[in-house]
Structure formats: C-alpha cells, structure tokens
Image (tube, rainbow, N blue to C red; front, side):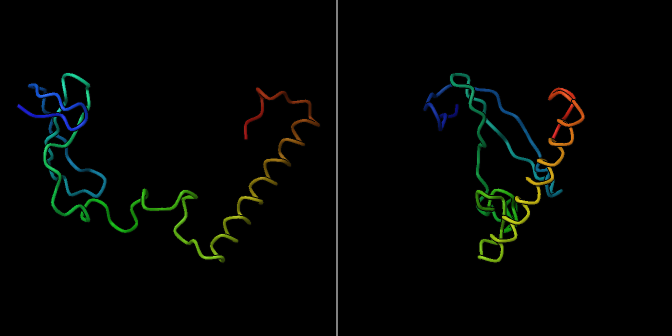
Length: 107
C-alpha cells in the first residue's frame, strides 16, 4: 500500500511502468496512480536527476525561452520579435486589401 504525496490517501492503487524515451536511455520507472485523487506519481525518484535533466533541458530556459539573457541576447530577441510582428502586419494588410476575411487568412 502506498501513501499519495498529493492527497495523503493510503490506498491500494494501480501501478504503471514507463520508460524514459526523450534521451534514449530507456530506463524503466514505476508510477503509482492514486485511486482517490487520480494523481500519477513516480514511486522512487532517482538519486541523480542530472542524467534525465541536462543543462540544456528546455524547462531550464527563462520565461522568454532563451538561454542568453545578456543585453546582447535580449536585443537579438527584441529584433526577432519586431521582425516577426512586421511580417505578420504586412500579411494582414495585404489580405485586407485583397478582401480576404479573417477566416481565410492565418498568421
């Protein structure tokens, strides 16, 4: 019997086996499904998570989705966003002049 880490229910739940596939290690992990709240949680967290979450893991990027937060990196991001906006604005203007309705035009 396992205790749920979320609702703290102690009940016999289902177990599931899942393999790591993102990096190709194919390591197996056992998960517990709580019959009370439905939470799916790993049974035993690996002692060294760095194997599964390397430095370039996508969630480690900042909220802007970029790794380079120096002033140079921020300027590069702003230039790219401005260019993207200008391209979309030009497309909308062309579509409007051509009489295309919004349902016919996608950004």
